[in-house]
Image (tube, rainbow, N blue to C red; front, side, top):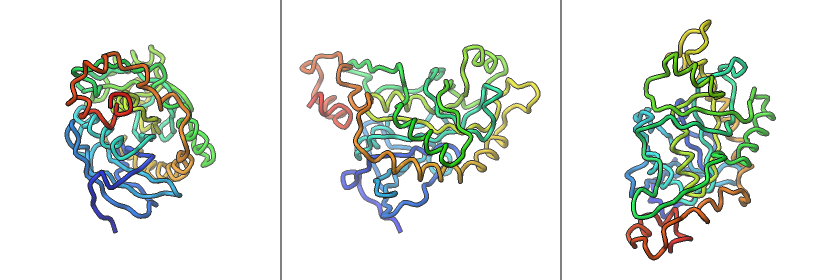
Length: 295
């Protein structure tokens, strides 16, 4: 049985953002539902908070229950802000992706290390007025969290590919064949629609961010294969739901300790605007994100 509370009553240290096909978490105890209002609107859905193997966990379905938000309209700023406001330090993103390489087969798991941003319609920063911030994004994923996922996947005998470059396209339509060939020529390995702006926002919020990217198809570059369809994606997603949940049960307990990665201090030298030039209302608005620097 679950209850609903306001965000101020709750705290979690690890969050799972569930992608297509993953709309709930199994195995949590003491489950409660948290509703969070943010300066950037409401999150995709209520946040479910509970405990898994001694670690306080938050779960948020990226597209909302019933898959209501397309990739361009996911309230990413509200999602990351809400998770930060309840104490989350590490985010594990679960997503469906297409493969741009023969050796990255459908149903395989990729733990990407790099991103290419091909989005164009999304708000990608918390700092859109009155304060200028330039966070480092050379390595957009947390290496330590990614390593934990890799080790857990090996333990479960999952066919996993550590590292790799993900193209994040705007969507919601899939790639043209020419685009798919172009991304391959760039050296990209997989293509998805949701890792950005999440990764950028998580970095601005000094949160670790790592992705479990499950391959559902070969996009449309592979002439010998059927081009990607919704039916194909969903069919392979459903095959991986149980595996994804089993992997999360291995990963989350290993992420409960203190952090010593660069993510933890990403804003330390990134805020360019002088503190006395930042309006008080902006400081208050961004307090969960910048509080220790601007308070």
